Image 1 (cartoon, helix red, strand yellow):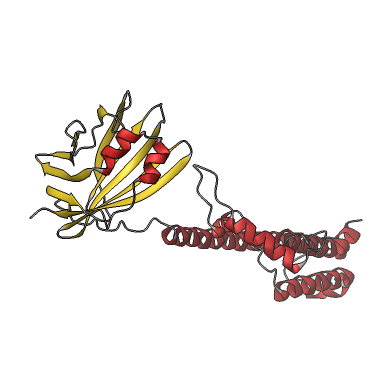
Image 2 (cartoon, rainbow, N blue to C red):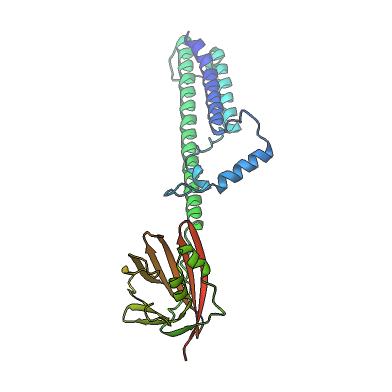
Length: 324
């Protein structure tokens, strides 16, 4: 019984190691798709997935992030190692079957019977087989751990590189503040018509006429405050608004002379160095607007306005020239 076990043990160990190697190899090979997908459909699907925006509040994961959770490739058992195990099995079988012939090779001082010698050879074969198997498994585990550590390190480096590549660009330097203070007279020929804005706000004839008679604006930018006054030929049509440069909101009478007030605030435009005046108002005809005051030339002031109300937006530009 013991002799048969010794003969079979090396073969069993060798077969088991072969199965372990095959199983580890299968774990590292991705499964094949069950159905074929046309090249065009696959390309369209990949393009759609790449172009799809990330959900609000969630950042898109870098493509290399999957490396961090992908199992590291199992290290190869090595043909040389497998051949050595095979040779060990053959030598073990030979030692057991020729134990009687090896009896004459025992040490001279060893007083042992032929049967005991045979048992000693069998035990030695079993012990060496077990030691070889354990050594092989330990080496394989160490190699697998090293491969996994290397894969994770590569994944972290790739993710760090992707994060650095997708990081927000350095902020562009803001334009120096423009000095808008002064009296500016309207250039009616260079300015856009105000008819679309009046139509959007459904202004009547009197207010529409007053808007068309605007002569210019006077701007004061000092002591942390920004003041804008509309110059008109009609004495009762006066618009004067003063805002704090720290962005504090302020309320004034509506410019269309309807009941209620509008809320406004100013902020510096980083792109031009001019001033953005933002206003919003409630019903009737609630909406919001932005007036962008900026210098097109040292003595030329542009006021680009975007007016939104009733689901429609109107854009127009007014051109003013500095009063000499």
